[in-house]
Length: 452
Image (cartoon, rainbow, N blue to C red; front, side, top):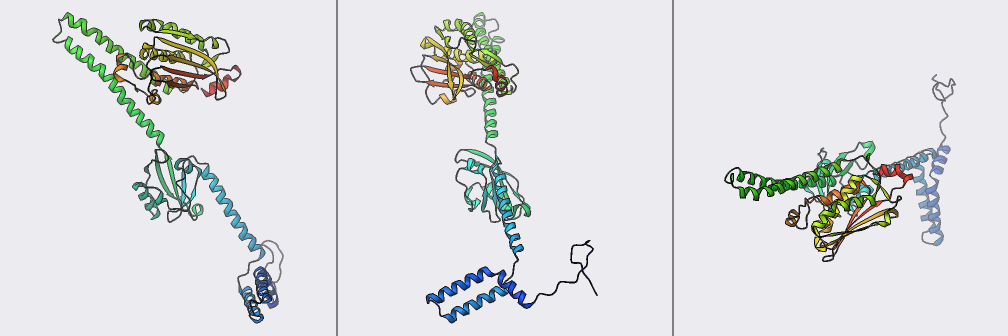
């Protein structure tokens, strides 16, 4: 006689097999385990019979059919129903966690089903693509790039395509590296493909800037070098013993050499500022003292151009009006701005240097305005004045010994000092270059140093 354990293995207790279920018990279990649809059907047929819509015999026949369906339908115990509900709840929580994880990613990510329909779209997609991506629509209808469409089709057909570059024009021009990956079944489920976009716009912009910078720098250096080569060839050949030619060409050669020297100095300054990540040389700087130093240093140049420098800095001439930064770099900022005013706005015969305390976005700051009374600048040029080598008038700038890098240097220095440059102008009424820098507060020295 075979015996079996009634408990789990290792109990040490033995029992006989459970008695078979009787017909009445099985019938009762089937009826009551499916009592919800039975009760609903009985109530419905009774309602139809009472209201006269169905004859009593037909209503009783319907009740009998529903009872038979309830008896032979698959039966789920209460524990089984709880397990199904628990699985559904766990799946819903899993999707919520997946959505939260995808929304935390900085790059646009889309989950696709096997037909290429977008099922999940993270928040970064809205930031980069606006409202042009919609759930439950085909990704192939949204994008027009042939390379991207081919990559998606290859992946949907079972291939493993490599990344492609995609250009998007809306809402703004951006470049992306798009990749698509098949997810494991236990992760992807009904959305087995992940489409990822990595933003290359900043890399492209820096690449264009680098190429433009090299081209412009080469052009600026090539011009004086060509002049020097031509004069040297002339003086060493036909004009070897021509004193008049020597007297005429040598000053021009010196001027071209000085121009190259200024250009190289500005290039080195700009390169140093762009790679200066630390601020170990920063200290509290008296801006009023810096402005006086610059005015005294540039007074001979201004007088030679017939320009008068008017100083109004009494409002910041106190110990509390200091900024956290580099004295040498701030001297370079105001020297470049005042030299530009002398060089390009000498017709105004006057340059105002005005300093004051001000609130900038709720931050206590110093505001220094370099205002000239020259011809002014057209509004179309103002947004580009801080670009490298950008000039309103190229020939006039070269004639006035400008390198086209002065305002670019100013911009980089102010960025290091958590400051900004604002330019306002009206044609015929001069221009104002406004420098705004936060005031240094001794108790927050560490915070300011970290920001710088």
